[in-house]
Image (cartoon, rainbow, N blue to C red; front, side, top):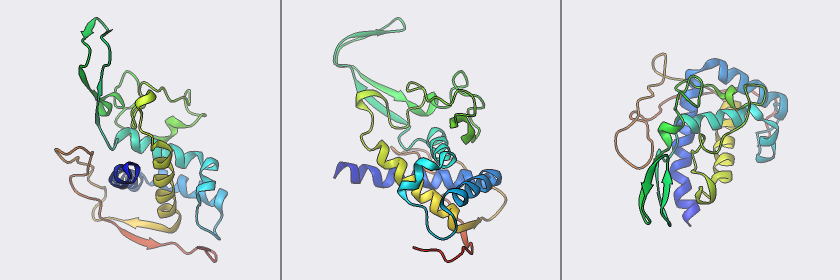
Length: 205
């Protein structure tokens, strides 16, 4: 029940943010569609079993989560006293971690505010995700237990929308302004776009 309730809104928000970034980056959309066509073909829809063979789609989802984590802040409570960079943290202290700021830190990320899925590919830079700087689901033993489920849900949703449709919007760019307040990171102006069906060769549902 907790996975279902916690994963519904957050996955929806993540899908919306990621699609907005893709629409604003036509070359990303083109590359993503080419990858899906080369792996899945044009006679069936993308499936969960295809995801391991779609590294660019995985990178797009991860980059969307880096820029727009569903929970930008999360709290942790210290069970014992500890010292962090010279600061004494008493036992039972509640700490609030700013995941949003960490994943846009210019000391850890090149062009931190730019949507660049290539940063998560092995052929781009180190290709390694540092558990202390990429934390859309938290980290360590207290990380979100639904992380794998979320990657699947968002990956399949984004993959199908890219595979089956072109997307038209009013204006040249999607407004990426963030809403103020709330526990989840929401768009101030929810994504509104028109799907234009792509003709595929005898698509099998």
